[in-house]
Image (cartoon, rainbow, N blue to C red; front, side, top):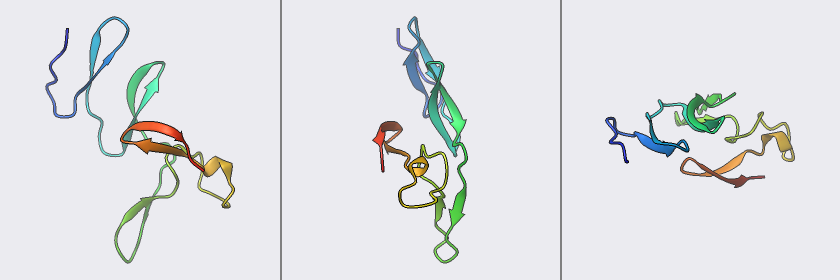
Length: 92
């Protein structure tokens, strides 16, 4: 039994018993799993860095990294490789 979404960006997931609608998140959130349930959360520790010349906004770390890199071999700053919202592998 498929549910119809009511909002652009609605998604569905199977909870083991029924299809459940996941409403779209807001800008600045990522979809993650909490106890097996898709949940929108803010990117932890994300800090925007704005280039004063171009006005471009960058994050100060890789997605999935626990800190800003302190060196080129800082394993805590490696992060994850994403394709859309799917984590593919750790990146170094």
